[in-house]
Image 1 (tube, rainbow, N blue to C red):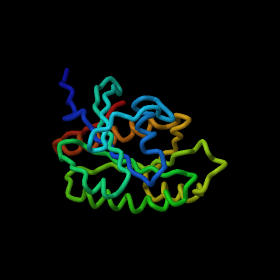
Image 2 (cartoon, rainbow, N blue to C red):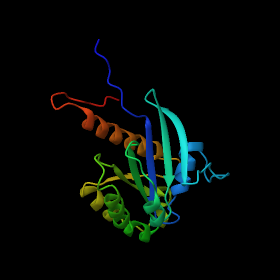
Image 3 (cartoon, helix red, strand yellow):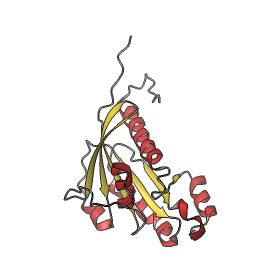
Image 4 (cartoon, rainbow, N blue to C red):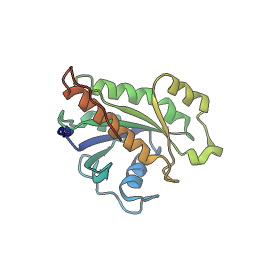
Length: 193
């Protein structure tokens, strides 16, 4: 039986960015502690990160969630090339301004990681789908974003809908990128779930 190739790292950094009041800290609290609204302050390190260990598909993972409230915090963030990184950009469907800020956050991330050898997955996250009656962002605008090739995920942190899917997808993107980098040109690499 051939040896299964192990992924080189089970530690991933997940940057959570977006405009104010879109649910960045709540997303982390819901995923890490299943709390909404979160009752206690999360254990956040001096660099605005929360470390969380979990098992996905039988593999142990350590996630370093970085809650980025401002671009200046993002620019000051010290990133090591040894930890694979994914970015979640949140907006609220009830806040048009948070949606219009997506391009700014996307371009800032792209520039920050322009010298990285690995592709950094960026997932766009539409929060507050439980507040459809207060919708300010037209569904057509979101559909246009999707048709332009962006990964857009609808979630409700309050309703605990779709959060696990977003994290799972980010991890699968990271695993695929790592395998693409380390595989020889003559070998096929797949992720089987």
